[in-house]
Length: 250
Image (cartoon, rainbow, N blue to C red):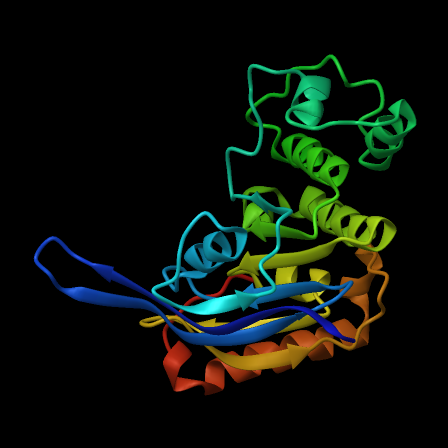
C-alpha cells in the first residue's frame, strides 16, 4: 500500500515562563498508507493530541515537516464535537456546501440518523453526537479525517458499533483516517497499522501491521486472530522499558 502522507523528523518544544524548555515530541517520523485507518497508541501525556493538531494545521512544530501539505483535513477532538444549540440537520450542514440533496440524504442514511434531523442532541448521548460529527465530516470529503480519543467517552457496546461505522465510512467514501488513543482494543479494531508511542518525550518506538480482515465487524473481537494480535501488542508494551508503568486501557 502506497503512502499518501509522510511525517518527517517532527519535533515540538515548549518554553516555560522561567525559560525551561520541555521537549514534548522528539524526531517523530512515520507514513500514513493510502486508503486505510492508521492509529497512534500512546499513554496519556505523550503529546499525541499535539501531534494530531500539528497534522491538521492547528499547531506548528518546532521543526520537521509533513509531506504533502494537505488542504482538506478535518479534526474530531475527544469532546465538543457539535454545536448543542443546532439541531441534527443544522449541525451536519454547518459550513458544508451540498451540491445535491441526494448526497445529504445518502450520508444521513449511512450514519443511521434518518428521521432525527429536527432533534437537538443531548450532551449525554455521546454516540448520537459522534454520528452527527461523522456525517458532517463525510459531507466535506476530507483528504484525511483525524480522530482524537473520541471513542473512550462512549460505553463499550455503542463504542463497537461506532468503530464499525467508522471503518465502513473509510471504505465506502474512500477517506483516510488517523486515530489517536490510549485504548488497545480501539486501536486494534480500527486500524490496519498501529504506531506505538512513548512519552517524556513523545517518540514512535514500534510499528505493528495488523493482518486482520479489511472489513471489520463486531464479531472480530471474538476471533482467535484478533486475540493473538491483542496479546502480541500487550506483550510488547510490557517488554519495552520506556513504557514501564504507563497504563493503557483495554
